[in-house]
Image (cartoon, rainbow, N blue to C red; front, side):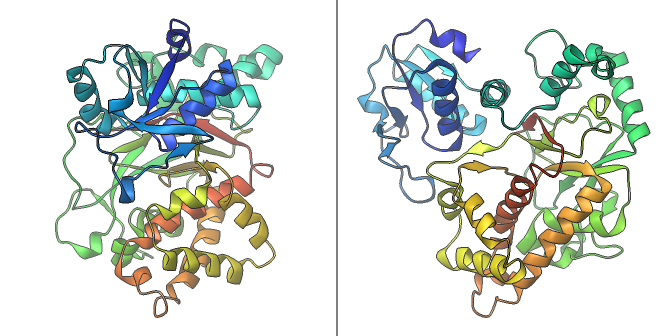
Amino acid sequence: MLIQELEKYNRFVIYGAQVIAFGAYTAIKGLTGRTPDFFVVGDASGILREGLNGNLSEIEGIPVKSIEDCPKNTFIVVAVTELVQKEVLPMLQEKGYLNIFALGQHEEHLLMSEYYDRIGKFPTLEKFREKNAQNNSNGANYFGLISNGNDEMITDSTCTEDESKIAEESARKLDLHMYEVGNHRDNALSSRPPLRAYEHPIQAGAALSDKRIADILDNIGINISEKNKQYCEMTASYWIWKNKKHGWKGIEHYRRHLLVRPELIGDDIDALLPLPYICYPNEMYQFRRFISEDVKNALLEGLKAVHPNEYDEYYKILMGQYQYTYNMVCARNEVFDAYCKWFFEITEYIETLSDKYPEIKETRALSYVAEVLTNIYFMTNQDKLNIYHVEKRIFV
């Protein structure tokens, strides 16, 4: 665990200056009271990158420096995506840095869930069940299912055959179905887990290609498959909303999975999402890294036109720091449908602004808007829905 490793060193730095790094910084500070000497960025040449991947010069008063400014004996917490880690870790070792902790996605989940538990926000499903088991007899029904006894990521490879059978039987009783969204343009992955019985591949944008990669297609029934270049995975969400009625339903991606544990879902749960990232200085800044001023204006106009009474509350979320990402959701049927109804009412209005803002029709801008809307919906429903959080797994 990262916190235990940090105890061995008097000083440390964090490699990275985006949401993973800022989340790690916030959690370390909240759990230990310690802060890094500085944040480290830069490629093998030590150059600070600008543009989309550019970084701020400081974060909460802590400077962002080049790797060349980092002493060789420094303890470095590498807090970037695992895809970027494949480049960064060999580069650091080649430069002579030996005291390195790579914050992988599982370690990140453990760190952030511990921090959120400390501040009383965004509870994980596992911690919720653990506290249930300690406090009342109803929770005792889940006690033996909560943990595999260590800090391993619980996946098919760490589950016993009996545990997998329990999960699949629980999913059957819940009528839970997760749809794994793929597209004919997707790149091949170096590894990909087998799907469970309740996970079903669905081809998004099937109307735009004769190539078939899944048995379930988003261009049959009521659909917006032809808009996939604008909406990306959300054409699959639309199809599930309009064409499927289950006890529970949700989406994940061919390279991003929600590690849903059906055996821990009960009547006291409404929706499952990945833990939110923490953005610096706010979600709007993070959103603006990927989209233009026109797209931002289209989003704000859409929110104000469709939900004028709630606009101030929504804007407050945009100026806050927490952000649900990737549009991955697993929820009760009625919750999923209410989310989609709210979501597509706004995006359909935004589509009417395409003459004023051509990017809405000509680019994938709506897919970035989608993440913001998903975040707004579930952030503003924290007190209305029983929302819990599960680990995500990203494949490269």
